[in-house]
Amino acid sequence: VIEEKITIRDMAEADLPEIMKIELDSFPVPWSEGIFLGQLQRPEITDNRVIIVDGEMCGYIASWFGQGELHILSIAVSPERRRRGYAALLLERSLARGREKGCVKVVLEVRESNVPARGFYEKNGFRIIGRRKGYYRETGEDALILEREIEAG
Ligand SMILES: CC(C)(COP(=O)(O)OP(=O)(O)OC[C@H]1O[C@@H](n2cnc3c(N)ncnc32)[C@H](O)[C@@H]1OP(=O)(O)O)[C@@H](O)C(=O)NCCC(=O)NCCS
Image (cartoon, rainbow, N blue to C red; front, side, top):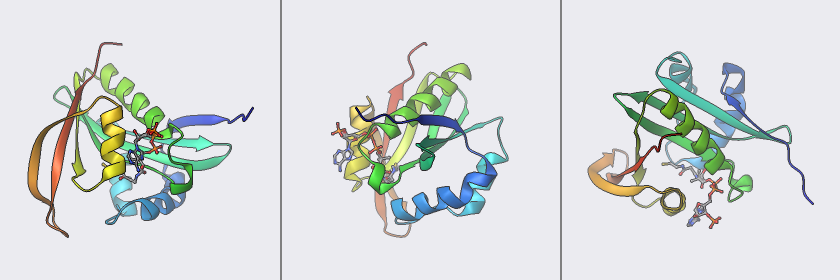
């Protein structure tokens, strides 16, 4: 039996060096530390969580809420810790927070070519509701807009 101690808690400024490692390993155009700080400076409209497994920072989710919608801005798990359900745990927590804040649906954009993320969102009940042409400026790639209801808790 493999036992893991999993902790999910609010992101803090002190987490940023470790978060940045995951970020750089996860995205073609990573967020800067300043973007994370901007999120942390708006606790009234954002939800930012980290997942720690056996003392190791393994992933994060950043979202904001308003007008009845939760918007997932970013989610990543360190490459060697993927496909163990950690992103699903982070999503679940953010959805719960959104529900508390009166959100009835969750929306996000994903790169059309991001097969793992699209698989992850499909598995977690999202459907494609639209497309933003050339949304990713550096490559001109389209974003797909995904949505799912947040059911009453
Ligand atoms: C997307 C991401 C956060 C998923 O994290 P994760 O911890 O591996 O996700 P979970 O373990 O909760 O879910 C795994 C499920 O996602 C889907 N999935 C994950 N990787 C996949 C892949 N390479 N191909 C197809 N589906 C995939 C599958 O449905 C998988 O379920 P399975 O393992 O039972 O087949 C992770 O791949 C990641 O950090 N990617 C880089 C950053 C990124 O692209 N973020 C999304 C931006 S919109």
